Length: 310
Image 1 (tube, one colour):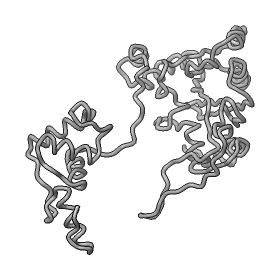
Image 2: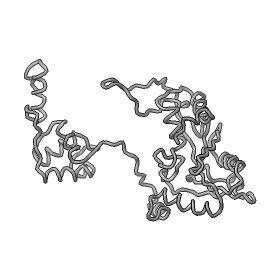
Image 3: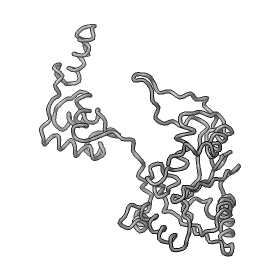
């Protein structure tokens, strides 16, 4: 590319011409039919419409328009068309393809899956006087848990990290997790936690259920996933306890969106571990398992409960 002059104006003019946009700054117009075709294409994977790129961005739009319509557009024009056609940039969530759609549909009926599950169990709980708890295990990192960070425009968003060793990075089932298990009751807002010093096993799961059971006289319904730690001899032995009044509801595989203790976006109550990551470990490198354990454990003390969302 040849620059028109060493000045800023010459650089801008030459760059616009190189990218195919006239120096007047007016983007090349796409006809209504072409816009409709572009909109339909962005709803598919780029490779499905002949563009060998991973996902849609301004370069993908430029290549599609060049190949399909024989026109060349600049970065800003491509982005403008994406907005003009109703697209916005969002951080995606995983659509878990291994989830059993039939089991999810059976559980959900015609309502959203988690709402249907909860509504059915509420009917049972009201009839028996039971309390419903959602249960899950946690995972914390000794390294920084990166989240959105407010910085001045033009400044980099940086978080200090001591680059902890691999053995210090994950603080959960195999480490000094301060509260590896947690349950939350949506009706009362009650939270119960239990830490473990080794891996999560059938024995630790049974111990956690026993801890929860000891604090309530009412029948209990506990909803959790199908983790291997939720099965095994110790669990079978504990569940055979006479007059236990404890029912376990196993969620379908690959369905974390059903679990209120795990989800952050649940309208009725925020996820416990999501709240800890957001308010306690967010953008903070603790460096060691011991320090992140102490910080997370402190978040369940009475003085911290003032900061819990209502």
